[in-house]
Length: 150
Image (cartoon, rainbow, N blue to C red):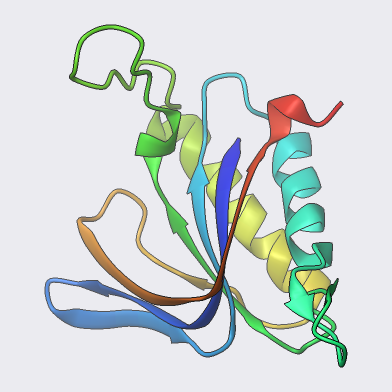
């Protein structure tokens, strides 16, 4: 699984012009599931997400997690994170997981984030054409791939 985590002042996701979910200060997370990903990957990434110290402390040092600051999380599925761009100019998505694997792992990631923070994780709708808006705070953007955890 691959995540793009952005520290945000606020973020929202809309579908067909209707607001689906929105958060204040916290993390906007794009979630990509690839073939071969497992429940262990989803749990590991959720733990990393909620514990990642990318919020400033009193001295302005990035030393606090989303849990420490009472922030919110918005997680949006995005299969294009698994694009292969090795050949030509049209990305290939052959390594992106199909719905039967991707949906349960995306939902597990979201439920684990909710369990660990004690707050409901806001979500988009898997497979929908979504419009995502965010104010990246910092900017701070972190990419995590569960296949690179060792």
